[in-house]
Image (tube, rainbow, N blue to C red):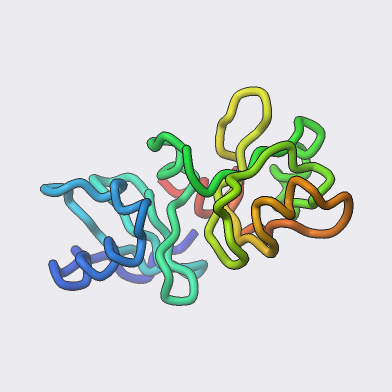
Length: 157
């Protein structure tokens, strides 16, 4: 991934990003060195040198490396092990593959997709339906994948 610009974020901009991150704002501790990378894919925020946040459509989302540093007890979607190989290729989450989901998920929420066995993050996505519907439905898409293991953002060093 090619980096166009790299600079430290101003305090006001950082405050706005933390507010937009909501529950994920714990990814940016106080006293952390926070930089913005403008790349050809999307802007990425480095927290102490680690790519923990990405910005899509002016909205900050945690990257998978950011999700790995957190306890995921909200906005999670658990998929069965059969879905893992498709998730690693960037596929969207289909309702039949969903084993469990946070019941508080609403349409349009940012969600972290984890595997059933190890509970490790596989992808970040945007929910198409509610968490309750994801578990109940037997067909159709549940989550639009935004970022997954093995993509350019994951490979960023």
